[in-house]
Image 1 (spheres, rainbow, N blue to C red):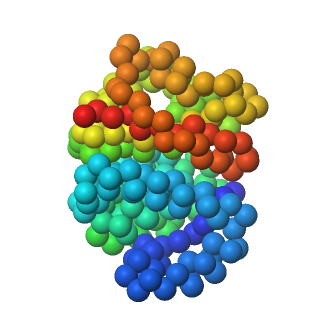
Image 2 (cartoon, rainbow, N blue to C red; image 1 turned 180 degrees about the vertical axis):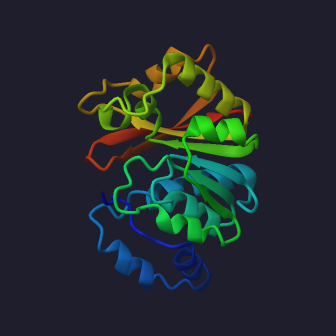
Image 3 (cartoon, rainbow, N blue to C red; image 1 turned 90 degrees about the vertical axis):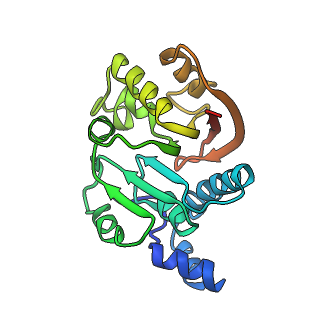
Length: 222
């Protein structure tokens, strides 16, 4: 199992930001078929946070289903305090093994845990939470396999807990209109499980690894 996201370390990102020398990053990105994925999301989130708060320094972020940590590491390099979690079910080749080593960098931590387990043991609140193309797996299991599928009651509790523990925004990415998903799936998913929704801001579209556009929203708690 290999990821479609570029493998970039926090030290690579920090060096590029501080020196404005992007050559090392450009070389690694050039080896990927989907070099825009991940970095595009991270920078769009960072831009939105900066516009709203005037600074990224110290903002507490939880990245749910963080994959190889690219979004989490990018936001940490920009000054946020980020925790990335992933159950690692699709990790057949040690994809996430290096993330534990990178927790030595200030502002970044990784925990290999299921979301339910994490929320039961970690009671922290967050300035924002990232749900980037992850919630549809709760309903169908990873890749519609049924594995790790949550019950309807589980999903209601998870969303309620995440809403309660978010101070500012949840960044929510979801399939828009692709095989297996009807148009408007992401909003309808929330309406199925939430009696009341926070204010939703459309942030445009992203592109999934399958080439289909995905909707991108901010759910604002403030």
